[in-house]
Image 1 (tube, rainbow, N blue to C red):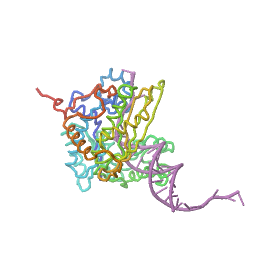
Image 2: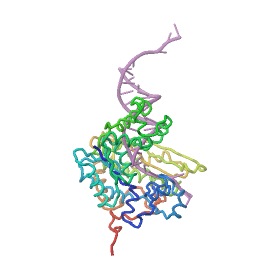
Image 3: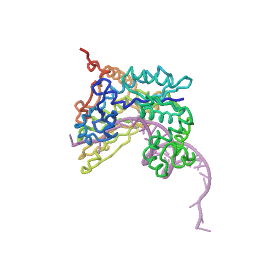
Image 4: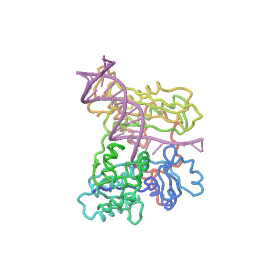
Length: 416
DNA sequence: TCTGGGGTCCTAGGACCC
DNA sequence: TCTGGGGTCCTAGGACCC
């Protein structure tokens, strides 16, 4: 059996842990730049605030209903996530961390799963203050389904087990097709047009029909709903095949210098991600674009790819080539809203093909980078960097940021 | 004033090879 | 008039996820 444990309204719940006055009050957490709503407490959901709503559209509601609003505080959420995951590991060694707020658990060999599940859920909530739900079933997709029920119906007390065909079919009948893990907007639309309303209707089609219209991916979902486990537990997280760092700017940028500082920053972040997974980039792509929502302004979207002479993860070198790419595409006369650096060709750093004409002293660069990493790791923010500028007009808007209660000493709560 | 960021997998189609 | 067959690799684009 597989369990899917998921933190309820995770970001909103994190904000509440350190600010209990928010209990019972509607809470929303916003995306970068305070752009749109990405997490909501149950009360906020009750007010009809939808996921992804641009913040300015709920301005009135926020004022009249006293909704508490927060900018994303990933430092806080990441730390709370680690705490939850560490507790899960005390209950079973086989865990797949699926996202910041979700994990799959291998639960074979445990007796009385109903009680064990309750114990897991109870312990996490007690030790971290984060409410969680657990679905347990023979496949990942069914565990996801169970998790929805655990969350939706209070009678389950946050744990729902699907361990018989009878329960499975009942759950399928009560689940709308669009709520199935793996069925997105496009497929939902298509399936509904075929008269398929529930997960149960879907399982009644033939596997070949599903494969024909929804590829092998859809067929896998179909099999999983029918009780056949097709998606295994991945315990070691595989290295990324693609690394992207991009941001929308708090303010539009039209000059080259600040734009180049942002690209240098993103390039350096990409280099850091590469080093952490012991990989190198063989090429990189830089893109910039204007604000697509401002239709009256001239629009420009361009990207440029550069092949690197030698695979690298040195920040200085990646920044250098990223700026070279930027120079190729930068044009005066536009207001840029977003830029990014993407790395798609990634190789392990242990087997790089060197270049006969390489002029860089790589051993020296490697030592330099290591030293910089060490210094920067001592501080919450990088203190040594290259070409990235300091006072950024493009920096993110975060008007409602909460303190880093659990990771920065000066932000810790005081009891007087 | 104001619309996130970061990933994965699969398929189709073109380039290229013998 | 007529133009093989089989394969690989790469990329772009579309679908999905949180």
